[in-house]
Length: 379
Ligand SMILES: *Cc1c(COP(=O)(O)O)cnc(C)c1O
Image (cartoon, rainbow, N blue to C red; front, top):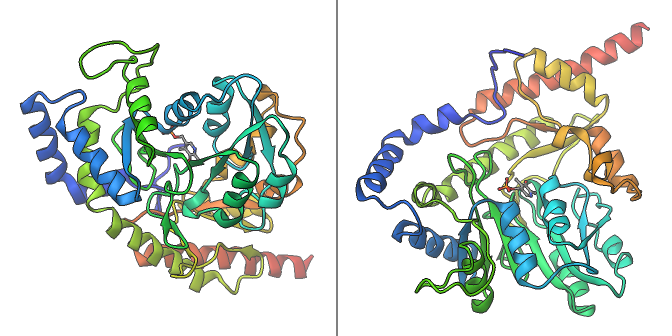
């Protein structure tokens, strides 16, 4: 559908214009130096990323999906093991578990749209090896209780932090809770590359070395092949560009929080909506990868907003991963996840949005619901 959006969901051209000279200078310098694979720019980015997250190590990889799979494989998770995760996530989370041979166990979400620790506790069996928790939409799960659960049953705690770089919970950064975590630098993510990219973070030196080896054909620094590996490297050029953007990330996250506060202020009185919590400085420090809301008459609202030139997304097309028949996970019954997917939509959210654009979106949402009231009364 060719359409001139007035408010884009993500706005790559505007983002590029804001950083154009720095991006081009970085590309020129990397290419002129011939620094294409596993060079200093990658090591610099890994150092800066680990410091930003609060872990000892970061290992750049091809994407978050590969990062999660490498973590699971390096930790020996495989056939006969069960891994607990959620259905309100991108299919990649479960694919990583599936491809290392373990069984995907899905549990329901709580009111916050994130893993419900009680449901996770119920799902533990003698075969459970790991909890793969997902910090969705820039908000960290209830890690106090999920960490206790992992400790009580001696389970590996792994974070899918694809959507949470810079989010904090009780002062701890996303990615610094478990044995290891993976981040995505897909272009639309909080820190976006110009293509696919990802990283694994951990404070376990042996695990970091193992993952660095697995991402590069099992090779050791001297060229010795230590084991069967993969090609899951992060390109040096992308690493250099990510390093440039990482230095500006805090400012972008602050802007996302301002926009979320503005959405909240403008929409909090619309009783047909359920909003995420507004930005706070308490236990949760949220960074709003997405602004996911629930809405009455969701599909009609989406159609109205799209018609007004506002680009809206339904999370993953409006289905949890157990609702995609081809994946063979249809035996899970997750009523709260299913109810949420019937009502969820995501409003435009990226640091380049103007306050006027947020006002326009809010105005159109209110116009939709007041129009419905008038029509309902007339009927
Ligand atoms: C984007 C995303 C992934 C996958 O990241 P890639 O870098 O595209 O592999 C995994 N999990 C979640 C929650 C995501 O949002």
